Image (tube, rainbow, N blue to C red; front, top):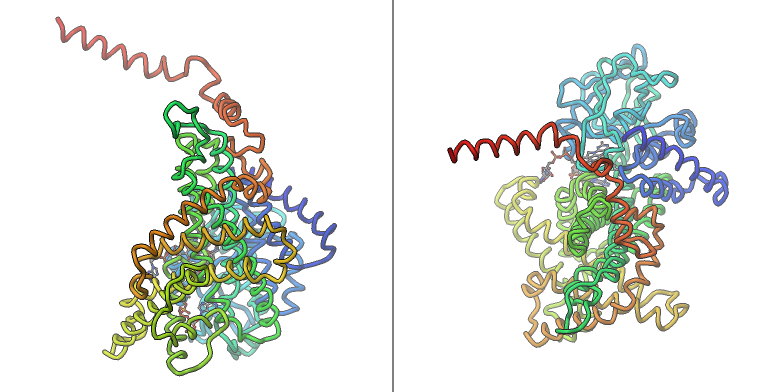
Length: 616
Ligand SMILES: CCCCCCCC(=O)SCCNC(=O)CCNC(=O)[C@H](O)C(C)(C)COP(=O)(O)OP(=O)(O)OC[C@H]1O[C@@H](n2cnc3c(N)ncnc32)[C@H](O)[C@@H]1OP(=O)(O)O
Ligand SMILES: Cc1cc2nc3c(=O)[nH]c(=O)nc-3n(C[C@H](O)[C@H](O)[C@H](O)COP(=O)(O)OP(=O)(O)OC[C@H]3O[C@@H](n4cnc5c(N)ncnc54)[C@H](O)[C@@H]3O)c2cc1C
């Protein structure tokens, strides 16, 4: 499977290169690389072994290396003359980066770094493509000078001979084994023993080791985390895509499949006529749209920040970090939950490999773990919200994406309930700020009672992650509201199209309201009648969106090859394709399976003989 994936990935990368040259000659703009990776990944159901090369190796060389280092390594990597990966995670550590054990000791005598993975737990473990595909990697290690720890640094390390692909002396590299999906990616392990690289193989845009061993610290240590921010932004778009694919499959199947009359004596309706089926499918269509828009917004912010960082302006890094964490977590959680709900909406056929929903789930699910495990990233945002709440208490201004926190903090109570979109959005924001305040009280009480900050974060973890989740909901819903209601190009939309968008906004806001009703009721008084009115509106807007469901998913414009699903094919010939896929199964090549003579017949005969004997 790995070699098939590499073959496909190379073919797709070549195709992409020609498209880039045609549409973006000589451009190193990130979009083609991004879309390239998405396009390649979408075409290879078992995952793209070049993903981390495209998304992290080339990017780290460009953003963390000096211009000279880019000329030496980056250009060849961008041109796919060398294939690399990003080797940070170890067998023993993934989340706690300051606990990474791989080390780089500077030898001023030879102006080299000596790289070691001192223990088994120090082995790099997981990097995509490391097992068999890559001949280079960015090796993340703790930097030591005269045995004094200086923090994390990145090193360009060649691991395989460029001609023979043989692992170089001092390199122990291989595949980590089968996974629940993405088995075409050859995630690998890497051990280094006294492996020497020249001083100039340490990426030195932001921090340097001079020939005499003097260390020049980075002005902002967090900039070494920047490659991860990029992938978190990419995950937000990639996983909204996976959800959109699954929503397309389930929607198309739901208007082909007929089952269970709604009225006695009536013909069996399309299953999408059942209200509960609409509640399973249509909100996921809308969630995919909502996250696609939020991810595009975040990508723009990433581009702006990346350019600023290049100019050594690090001011927007904290806000981008917070939003990248929030969106990576919310999109990966909601997409995996949504894809599974859509699989269940397709009955038994949803469980067939021919439906491809299981594979889409297996492709989407690891995003809850890689690039920062979700609960850890929510804790990151919880900590950032605590810092920002202290700013609010001190009357200082907050970063733009948190401005609503200041506004809500000035409200002594929630205004009269109207149930309008603005009211629903404000309710989510108000509940978020209430949760931040409660978390801060708990956190602060712990710090006041002499707990360390890290211990106070841990023991306030449930309230911190709740506040972070609601901050994510507020950001995503606020972004969707702005795009639908206040977008500068709203007047270019036809009234019909605007109406469909407004129906999607209505559904998203009401769905989020019901999902967090408990959190909202802690801070806002809402009567039973007001809640029942929202229940009616929910049922109403599902009915309104039902006729547009197929058109919206068709607008995602996935080719049948990308969906790779007998249930979601554009022509709707589901049963013919299911049957065609079944006949292709190897077990159907013979009428009598080989195991009959070898196992089944003797087994049944032995039972028959025993039965006869017991009667005698
Ligand atoms: C297509 C599919 C491809 C799949 C590719 C998958 C690739 C991978 O998985 S690569 C490996 C990914 N690994 C990770 O993401 C590791 C996650 N862990 C971490 O990021 C860190 O250990 C973390 C954030 C949990 C803790 O960081 P640490 O420095 O130990 O302590 P912490 O105090 O929390 O952070 C220090 C400061 O840095 C800031 N910070 C942390 N991370 C970042 C960041 N990424 N950007 C900017 N600032 C950051 C914090 O906000 C904090 O700021 P302040 O001092 O103002 O409060
Ligand atoms: C498909 C896939 C591809 C990957 N590709 C790469 C790659 O290319 N390069 C690379 O370097 N890595 C890669 N990774 C590794 C990935 O980044 C790590 O798995 C991830 O960072 C989590 O680290 P861990 O697995 O060591 O889990 P741990 O850090 O051991 O965490 C395990 C669990 O402990 C809990 N936990 C941990 N820390 C905390 C905390 N501070 N507070 C509360 N709870 C906590 C969480 O529940 C977490 O799920 C990949 C992983 C996968 C699954």
